Length: 327
Image 1 (cartoon, one colour):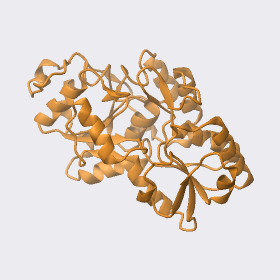
Image 2 (cartoon, helix red, strand yellow):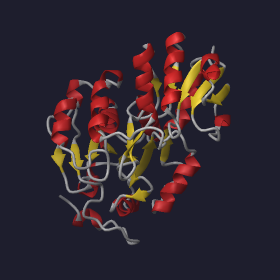
Image 3 (spheres, rainbow, N blue to C red):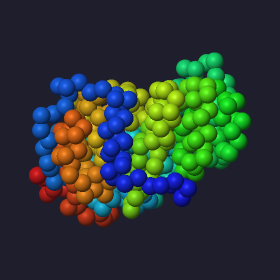
Image 4 (cartoon, helix red, strand yellow):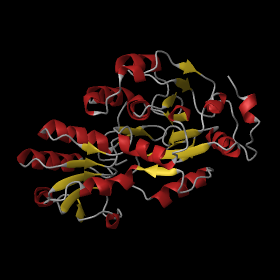
């Protein structure tokens, strides 16, 4: 996260998610469970599911570090034949880079496991065939070659903001207040499409919540009235891709595991799959989660402190953990 802009507190982040909820996917009332079952950890309910879908930040890792118990939990699930998918809104990194970081933390994932919001950016751009020049919220070394058309990183030149036909909000790491002001003013003067590769408002980074592209997209929308078009959780693209890759798995046997109500839980509920919320080491760490459920009108089917709560990471993850770690 850039030092040029403030970090979000939990209160600021949850208020933003609640405020912008009308812009997020809708969930049918009967898709929200009447109550949440609190369980020890993921292994306590793993026998109910054939495919388990994980958010990364706040579930598998917090910043660069794996959350305690997560590595062994994943290894255990893999050892007993559970299908695993990892979905991420990290549109700033290639799949290879994301996988390399996970392997360094101790997770054994491959390309078949990973679904990134980045892969949906180019198809979204192609829906705007009349636009051939885009300005991007992304560092200069971002791999723009993976995108169609002409894409240039937005910096301090107001002229570029006015020259492009649309905007891509991908990576807010070095985004400044000055750039946000130029983006908003340019959109006020000439409204154009806003495509968002990472719709997260914030992400847990260990000791703080980083401000993500979705936050700035909503501010831009407030200024100019243009509704951002988003890919990534909680939007349908990633969930449809998960189900497309596993056509043999009954939707009732799919579980989405995440640490936020308005991205992971909402996206899972909107897709008609079961949900597990974790609240230790992620976005909701130390918060009154029942209050969040009440205020949002959303709740998961299950809740646990962490996927591997009470499970010690070591190199001997095995199927026997299912029995020993049950509720």
